[in-house]
Amino acid sequence: MRRSLHAQVEGLYQACAKGIGIKRHGMKLAGKKDTVIHSDNTRKAYLRVWHSIVKFAKERRGLTSIDELNANDVNSWFLVQVRKGLAPLTIAQYRSAIIKLEQALYALRERKGGGHV
Image 1 (cartoon, rainbow, N blue to C red):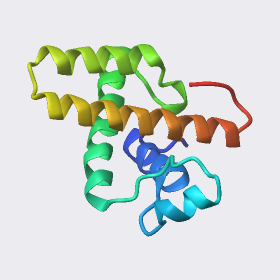
Image 2: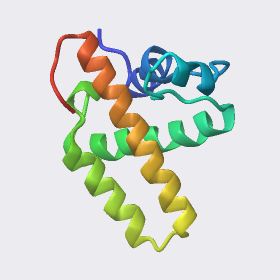
Image 3: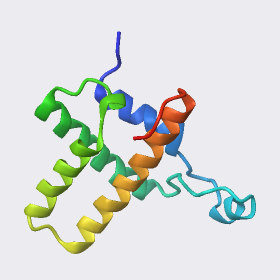
Image 4: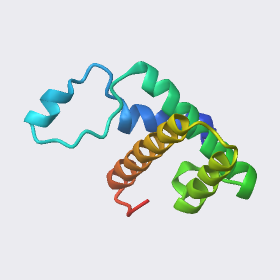
């Protein structure tokens, strides 16, 4: 039985984006790209966006797995948010959350032997 979309998003964070307690400086010294979320407040904000995107895709086209999430889903969600006339800082935060979502999905697909987002 497939997990709920909510559980899949939370699992994606745990598997690919959890970086609370990991020092950025140490990652830089090791030559690793910083693709994780280091702050709990950032985690909360980004996961709100991730859940909103997934919910949007589920309502729009019946998404049942985050593996099926694609750029069209994310772009459509983002355009809806922009058209709401939200503050520029909110839109910037959404863009940052989308970048981390893309990085996490890419890492997940790499682990599964898959391709690009």
